[in-house]
Amino acid sequence: MAEAPLILWFRRDLRLTDNPMVREAAATGRPLVPVFILDPETERLGAAPKWRLGLAVESFAQALERLGSRLILRRGPALEVLGRLAAETGALGVRWSRLCEPGWRSRDEGVKAGLKRQGIAAESHAGHTLFEPWEVRTGQGGFYRVFTPFWKSVKDRPVPAPLAAPAGLRAPTVWPRSDRLADWGLARAMNRGAAVVARHVAVGEAAAAERLARFLDDPMDRYAAGRDRTDQAVTSRLSENLTYGEISARTIWHAGLRARAEGRAGAEKFLQELVWREFAWHLLYHTPEIASRNWRGEWDAFPWRADNAEAERWRRGMTGEPFVDAAMRELFVTGTMHNRARLIAGSYLTKHLLTDWRVGQAWFEDCLIDWDPASNALGWQWVAGSGPDASPYFRVFNPATQAEKFDPDGAYRRRFIAELSPDPGPEALSFFEAVPRSWGLAPDQCYPRPVVGLAEGRARALAAYGRRDD
Image 1: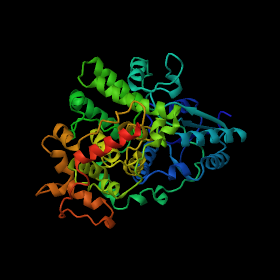
Image 2: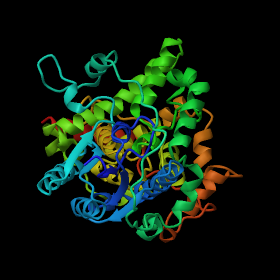
Image 3: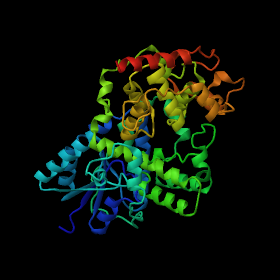
Image 4: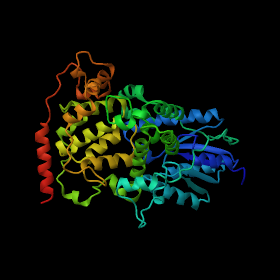
């Protein structure tokens, strides 16, 4: 029994530092067989997150090799793959880190039950969030529906210190076969856009740690005052790495606590933003419908427009509103979007264009390399007004006045919109390298007229919201 291997099933925890599953498994002294499975749930990822996941898997496999281990790649339904792998290796146990997205949860529950029927021990570990969603309760024993009391409840809770990476992982006597990552074609749906977005990624555990160190070195002090400025590099950009577990929330949390203890100006706000991610997973666990239905039932009767031609212009960054278009083009060029820009782009789609928030949610799910099911759902429902702790329905962001505040010199807009500059820079031009050729876009074309006047769009939205209350 002591020599029987353990299978470590990696998913969104592609790191060695502060990985409870890895540390506890290594401590057993047993041979360890790390595996990543391309199962149907993973196959359904959008183009950009699936491509970026492939990069994360490749980087993690290299990290394991440096420890004398390997990452076995297999394709197929998770229970079938794990059962076969256990039979091949003689493993009597499988471990993984818990995930709370509804589809992933039901998969994991089925895998755990199926493995136990086969006499294989199945054990899940914490590690994706600071707190397990069921650990944070209101005084009445329920779950939090509003962010501010949630923040007050958790901000002083003890969080275990990050765990060091193991010095080594014991290898099995014989390694099972592995698929080739290249054969999976994870980049296929990205087409030519992969080469453009690749210029902006920071892949792997070491890159994530370096990103955190750079943020702590200087931008942290300007974070509270400048995090909404789209023309300034003030944010940490760690959402990309958190998505694939290349860095843990606990590692970032403790770095933020140290900065706060040192009196750093932006530390408290930075910690709050990390807890906003926590709040999103808390809500997704307790109300999984947030990912697909209006969280507030009274919005079910609202006449959202389904996908439409104006929404297509939004997707293509061709609405004629420069701040909105810069945001949508940033998404194509970098695979991410500044948080303030996400609010403006989301408000414009759901309010000026009265388009269902799920249209935007689906586009982000396909295009974001930092796509997170909980944060994406909460963000879209917040800006649309249909979710928990939402922006008031009558708050309609004006892209022009928002640009004056958060891109006062137009640097962000010029950075991504070639038509606004006589000498466009490389990122503005690379948008046209990334988009599908079928769109027929070129940098020498005329910038489009606005889809809708800002005052007209706002009035139309407020009239529709007024009818909702009739």
